[in-house]
Length: 169
Image 1 (cartoon, rainbow, N blue to C red):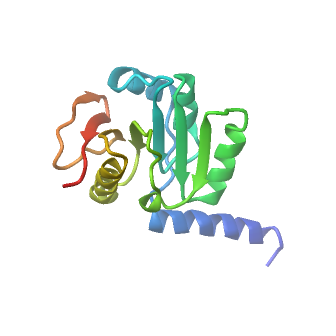
Image 2: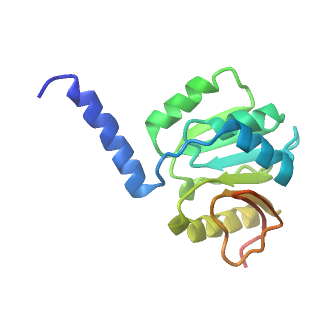
C-alpha cells in the first residue's frame, strides 16, 4: 500500500465513524444563516449560542457577526481543526471536540442551534431540556430542517424552526 493512502484512509475512517455515531457533515450557507437568525432570534452581545454538531464553524462565525458569543461542539476532530483554524482570530468563539450528548451547557446559554438527523432529535431535545433544568432557565432552540415532536414552533423561517425548550419535568 502506498504511504500516501494511509492519511487518506485515516481521514475516511474518521468521517465514517462520525456518520455512524453522529450526523453527517452538511455545510450551511452564510446568507441563509444570517436571514434565519434575523427572522427567528436576533442574536446580540448578551447571547451565548451553542452549536451542537458545529461542523466547519460557519454557524459560529455568523453568530459572532451578530456580536454573540458561541461554542461549537463537534465530534469529528478534522472539522474541529478546520473550525479552530477558521475562527482563530475570533475571541468570542470556542470549539470543543466532544459528543454533544455529553456536553454540559454554560449557565449563560440562551440559544442552541442544531442541524442534525431526524433520528437524533428526540434525544437531543431531552438533553436540552435537562440542560435547561440544570442552568435554571429556558433555552431557545433553532433547528434546521427538522421539527421537534411535542413542541410548537414559536417562529419558522423557510426550513428553520424556533422553539422555546423548558426544563425537563
